[in-house]
Image (cartoon, rainbow, N blue to C red; front, side):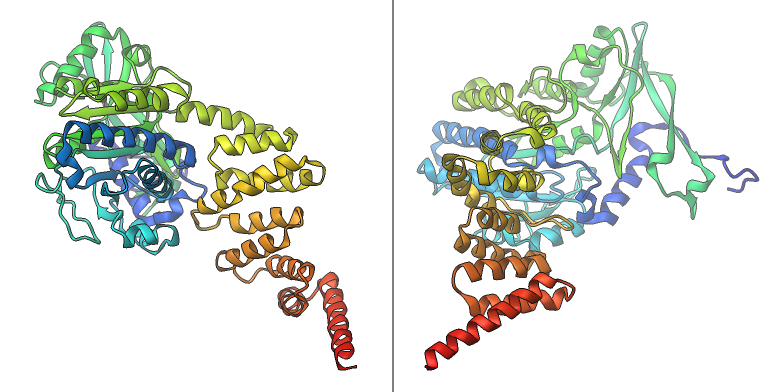
Length: 533
């Protein structure tokens, strides 16, 4: 399209059903193009990819496995498949698998076979997982496998490593699904209720001409979204389970607009077929968890952050499962994210340990509560005493992501801290090292653990972690300088001199390094002279 005005609006589409909008194609193109880089300071993901939420999920899944085996003793002879939808970076996968396998061993259930399936629609992410050192041992043992799965398409799901196609014959036990920050990014339809009538909201998109290159918008954040209305007078989907939800909304809501997660419903229906109608789903996302929370809302808003996301209508998903003979547990209202649990083919009342675990880990101190507390704590870390920081790290499961924000504060406090607190942190540093899941353009926790041990003068442990950090930080001046200092304190002056020289080769302007080299050369030469004489 041509325009004489530089700020002319270009109409991209008009009066489209939301689920058929070009926005969803742009979304897919973004994730396919960016690959793992989408999760480096662009798409929010920490809130659902930390050790705390992984432990919460693992506790619930452990209870579910125990309940299912108690009801079906033969279940122990078949794998429990756990599939993560839209895996993304893989950090959550690592924390969950590490935690669940540890719990199974502690509960004398190490013989129970699990297969955790990391899935996504883009090969770029799978290539990253396949090469990731943290996942390697689990992949080699068959505990983790990978699959290409597009939630918007009904195509076979084949495990890459085992070459097994998921089917009703393979999925003897219920298929457990994790849906974290994914229901909010696949297709929705949009509706409104006004004066007892149901309307479809039809989407129109436009953008500035300057935002167009080769007839395509460059920046999704510069797209304007407008809605038109069209009354719905008959069964909209032709699916009684879905249409009954719209009928209930039409009767019960007074004046509002709402989203309907049709892409999620299509995926759920497909996965139910694969799994003999037996699904166990845990989902954490931003969304609405009750009928009351859906009333008196304006037109749906779209949050842009590299990609874009929408609020999830968990109430509708819960109604769908109950309408089709399953069950749902929707967390009571909290500010921020919501965690919900859904079942198909059984009810939570039949699973006592699962029901207790859901009450404790979803409705009790939940991932939402943890993140609310963490966010408040992170705002005041610069004021916290070391024992307070240590307590928060324990709650957080010794999360490297948090410690990287704290390392300067911690090292500034160790000189005056009490021995018990120092020993407590030192004891748990190995846990934090085990939680390291490397991602591009992020700092290395192994180096910072080395700095901590260096600061408390435990030079042998500092040296160990500096060495472990080398493959991740590469040829970095600070690494070799610190390593040399530790080796000097350990009376390994030959190694210290070698590493000071390496550091000086990386930064020849460092006077301190030059002085250390001179000092050690003289010391070594003097010692050699003493030996000869």
